[in-house]
Length: 76
Ligand code: F3S
Figure 1: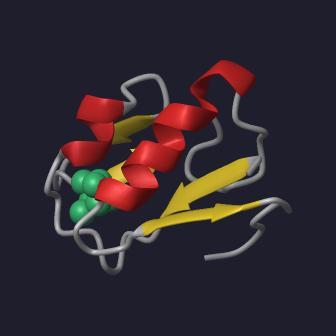
Figure 2 (figure 1 turned 135 degrees about the vertical axis):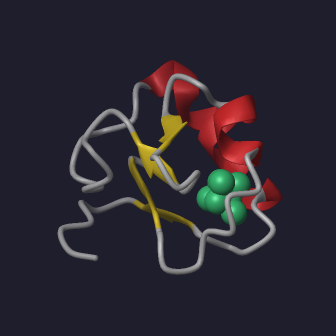
Figure 3 (figure 1 turned 180 degrees about the horizontal axis):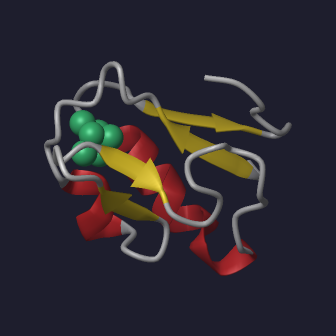
């Protein structure tokens, strides 16, 4: 995988993603997660060393809100 974003429509602010991968995920004022490296656009490649963390988060998110892809995710 190369790209990641959070579906904020389905995120339930559980907080797992920022715990597992604090270099990639943070939370907005409502506690909803977003990807920090590209403001949740899914357009910037995840640094190689952080990909395993992102996969862990993908599997851990209880609402399946972590969207991962090999191609750039341009729209919501
Ligand atoms: Fe939301 Fe899933 Fe993170 S519910 S806070 S995107 S682990």
